[in-house]
Amino acid sequence: MMIVRRSFFLSLVLLFLPACFADKQTTVVSRVNVVNGQGSVCTEMLQMLSLTGITHDGSLQDIVRETQKSWLRKPGAERWEMPSTSMAQESEMRLLIDRMGFIQEVKPQQKSYTYLLLLGALFSTVAARMEYAVDLWKSGVRFEKIVLLGGARPMTSEQGENLEKFLEWSGKSYLDYEPKTETDLLRFVIENIAMPDEMKALPVTVVDVPMLQKPDGSMRRPTTGDTIEWWLKTNPEPGTCLAISNQPYVIYQDAVLKTLLPAQFPVDTVGDKAQEDKELGILLDTLARVLYQEQQYLMEYKAL
Image (cartoon, rainbow, N blue to C red; front, side, top):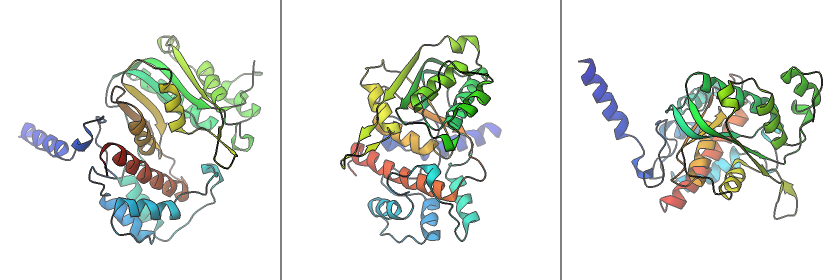
């Protein structure tokens, strides 16, 4: 009876996998599909739209347009610069966000990968992501090469990217050099974190994308997409990728990677659970970015 039940459950899971994406790449794990292959958003997302008072005609194009206006942070603003957001029925919203897979830890679905992709971020986040990667290695997950995906974003002292924090984290009384950019941070973390000898011996590729010019002439920091495109220009050998993020950004960064990486680089994006007090505004901003990125994916590969 147990075997029959398991077989039935597996059949249900396979039935709802997004097979329409199989022409490019499909992640092994089937999380809640925020957007399916026909461009329809999930029930939980529709409920989020209703709770936040967003009206739409039901199409993904209109939903993206309205959430970009209502949920997305202002152009040029960083996540940590967003004001606190409090809304009616916030607890219900957080429950829906959790059900869509933006809160709980996302674990690897395989035991072996070609590449570990460490995605750049603030110092505290980069350190936590690398610590998570070390824990994965200790649990038996293996990868052959490490790729640090960073850019020339300057340090943000008020966000803990300063000498005091670097010394505290590394346990040192002085540093041979003080990180000045996000790429420096990635190097600093991987050079100073405790890790098993076999992991420490792995070859490391550093992707360092310069600040990029916007149409108005101002400069912007490189995004996850920019670092991936820069890495692909180096013609890496095809292989499976384990991308290290953290919640609530796993689904968004997985959507970016899924869109940009060729089929020869199937990706599994993972990360530790989100903080319980994560700002609602940041969560909504992330949802808006996921919707936009899923639309981009469908437009590029499914002629939406």
